[in-house]
Structures are given as structure tokens and as C-alpha cells.
Amino acid sequence: MNKAETAIIVLNYKKYEDTIKCVTQLLSLDVKLMIVIVDNNSPNDSFSVLSDTFQWTESVHLIKTNKNGGYSYGNNCGIKKALEINPDLEYISIMNPDALVTDERVFTDMLFDFERESSSAAIAPLMIEQGAIQEERSGWLIPNAWDRVFARTVFARKKKRNAKMKGPYRIVEAIHGSFFIVKRQVFQDVEYFDENVFLYGEETILGIKIKQLGKKELIDTRYKYYHNHQYSIEDESKVIQNGKIMYSSLRYLFLKYYNPSRLAKMVFILVQGSLYYVYYPIKLQMKKVLYQGVARVEKR
Image (cartoon, rainbow, N blue to C red; front, side, top):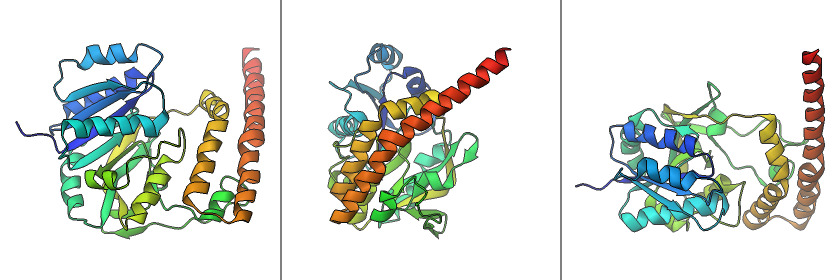
């Protein structure tokens, strides 16, 4: 039996319903894939439910980490498991449980054309989110140091650099982490994801390391996938609760990979620290008060 050339890593944390939907959709495609589900030490019944669901499916492999080490750690565990099963894989795909690929050509025609792009390392289709194509969020150019310092503030650059087109491809430097495909050798060359970040910046760090190899990342505008992430006030609350972790990851990314000047370091810590420790918590609290007020009015 021929082995699959592409391994898809699906990282699960508590939301096993999404994972089952995602993997079931992949299994419905008429293409040979290896699927590795990584349960990131979920504190619920995820592992047992996923095990019961896919235990008789030969192409699905399920593992559980010994800790919730975040996106980078969990996906690295999945990548290493996939390479243990088949060291000769051509491609490794990272896929969030809330992403859906309904077009099998993503794993056939898109990769066939991608193989001829020898200077490119990673690729993804356009992302559809909340019913609309998210061209800029699908892939982007990595901001410079001062853009990173003032990101999400009134001093942020109003006009972003535009990615260039080459035929059907947008040439980008980082791809949205919900779904993308990387050449296996490239993932090994960059030594996988940097596990020093837990919750933020993984795609940018990977993009920087790929750029250092002299390689490109592509968005193939001929194909699409769905990212079914739902945003709510509860999500914002989680962001604030995890603000220290997010800021820590962002700070690590900036200091490790941007080699900033002493002045840039100081301004970054002042500006971004204020955002995560002061501005965002106050903004969230004001929204909660507003929503509660609206709810009271509607009850009357």
C-alpha cells in the first residue's frame, strides 16, 4: 500500500466536536492523507471520545501530550509523530479543528503546482471567515521593528505593504495558523515551531525562519478553505485573561527575532505592555458594562 505524502496535524484542546467534524471532512476527500490528532492534554473527555471515534480508522493516529504546552509544542509533537510513522513525507500540514477543507484539489492540484515553485516553502488557500474571503488575514508581510512596537495603537502605520502577485499566488512572509502546508524538509531545516511561545506569534516566527532560508510563502488564490472561528465577548475575556501569556510571547518574538535597538526595546515594553496590562482590560470591562445595560433595557 502506498504511503500518504502529506500528513495533517490537527491540534485538539477540549473542543473534540470541532476536531471530529474537521477530521471527518478530511476523510471524505478522495485523496490519501495521514492525519495525526494531538490532544493537548485536554482536561475533559477529549482523548477518550476521539479514541472511540477514530480507533478503527487506519489513516488517523491519535496521541496525547503530557502537558498543554500551547500551539507550538502540541503541533511539534504531532509533526514528530508523523515523521516517526513515515520519515519520507513530502508535506506537513497544520490545521486547526475549526478549519474545514472541502476541495480535495487543495491536496492534489495545488500541491502539484506548488512543487514546481522551488523557491517556496509553504502554501495555503485563501481563508473564508464569517462568510467572507479574508485576503489580508490569509497571509501577510512581516512588519518591521517599529511597526511591531506601535502595532494596534493610534501610531500604527495606516497603509500596510502590499503582497506582490505572481500568477495565481500572493507572495507573503507569514500565513494564518489555522491551515497551511509546509514542505517537510523545510520544517526540519527550521527545526519546527519555536516552543518558547505559547499563544501568539507562531506564524510570524515560522515566517521569519523560512525567510532566513531564502524561501517564500504563498497564498494560492484559486482555492479556498473555511475557518469557522466565532468571535464573542467571552473570547475577548479569554484574551484578557491570557494577556500576560500573549504579551510574553509577543515580547519574546520581538527581542529574539527582531534584534531591536535599545530604544526600540524600551518603547516596545512601554507601549505593548500598556496595551495588554491596562488598555485591553479597561476596554473589555467597558464592553461588559455596555452589554449588561443593553440586556437590562431589553428585559423591560
